[in-house]
Amino acid sequence: MDLAPLAARIKTWGKELGFEQVGIVDTVLDEAETHLLNWLQRDRHGEMRYMAAHGVRRSRPAELVPGTARVISARMNYLPAGADPQAVLDDPNAGYVSRYALGRDYHKVLRARLRRLAARIEHEVGPFGYRVFSDSAPVLEKPLAERAGLGWIGKHTNLISRDAGSWFFLGEIYTDLPLPVDTPAANHCGTCQACIDVCPTRAIVAPYQLDARRCISYLTIELRGSIPVELRPLLGNRIYGCDDCQLVCPWNRFAHMTTEPDFAPRHRLDAPELIELFSWSEEEFLKRTEGSAIRRINHEQWLRNIAVALGNAPTGEAVVQALRARRDHPSILVREHVAWALARHRAVA
Image (cartoon, rainbow, N blue to C red; front, side):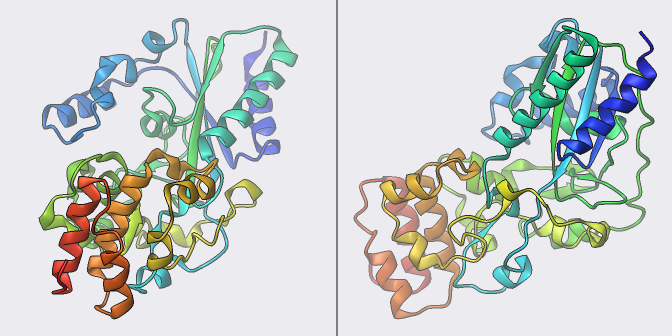
């Protein structure tokens, strides 16, 4: 089989399925593995124990999926039209939800498209070994994408494309087909450190080094317990994730809005009012986040995050009353953060 024409067709098929770019890479991730092990050794993964649970299978694709010879890496834009992200951040009475979580759960969207791409390949070559992933298994997505030519890992540790910025998802097909590989992307960060300077919690502790324990995305999503008191004021109105490092990245002037309907904002979450969100019952939370990446957290964490944002909001009767309505919540976690927020407004709990 002549695999070079097949590789070219795979990239064409990928674009027909909605991916902006597709690249192919081998399974050698030695440098990324060293970086990962050093990061874990410094405990910068915090409570994300799953990052260490699979050992080096994360950095050795053939150990995760035996027989893997190549990885087909693909990216898909997700930045939706809607409320201006900076305008939402500048409104202390609004809640900021990371732009990737405004629409349908990207895991489902990308995996479905990747399966369709794999089926197209199978129709062409017959049965072959493969598995598809999108942030859904121990996979070093960004190093793979970087080596597949999709972009470079910036100082904020996100992947950046020279032509499309960083507002995109990644997905992979692990395959046993020995396809020709692409040229890795070059780094174009230069002397810029805008992402380091803007990080509210100083989570980017050095270029290309992120301490997740200080990252707002970790604090509002991955952390299940109490948000450290000293970091709460720094969260501002960010209630699910954080995009600050992407908003200031100069390469995002080349970013493209998504054309994927599944990533359009749902339930006005692109610019929601904090008080309204705080009033959601668990039933309402589950209904309005159905099929959304926000389901990564539960209702208790949702209220915890919003209580912090309300504590950072301007003092007003409506804010205080909203917090007092939750002061006797059954959850100790929620009560703790509500009490902190009320204390910020010098209000009696």
